[in-house]
Length: 193
Image 1 (cartoon, rainbow, N blue to C red):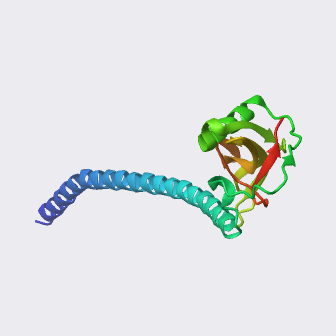
Image 2 (cartoon, rainbow, N blue to C red; image 1 turned 180 degrees about the vertical axis):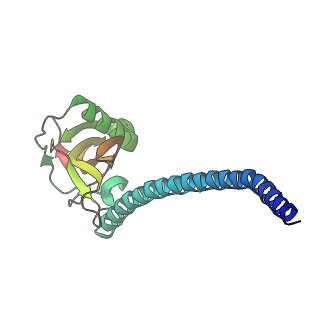
């Protein structure tokens, strides 16, 4: 009788082990798949959040700069407010820059002033990099000082602006833009020749 009990107990253990082994293997496989899916979603979320944070930081700097310019009375940069009684200034001497940068700046100026745009004059040939105040090793964008000559009616005006390029991962993104420089005045009558 004791042998039958031992045999029955052994058979029950063998049967229980045989049934639970595939179930545990399947359950473990399901857990591994779920773990992998969660890890991929978290990594994607972190990457998206990082890109969004960098974009938000760049936009915040641009907006803050624009608001500061407006609060300082620099709003005459595009609405044509200019004191006609002021004497015309002389054109600045430009520096050489690569042709592709000059053509990009000219394209941005044509978007801004249309047919009135005459020429761009680069005042610097090296990029000035602007870093994130919280992470000084992270460059947000870089810029060069540029004067844009624009014809309005019978007069020529110089707009003191900057040519900007976005930066991601330490390299230029190829996304260019222009905006008013924090120089007063941002627009002056010029002796264009």
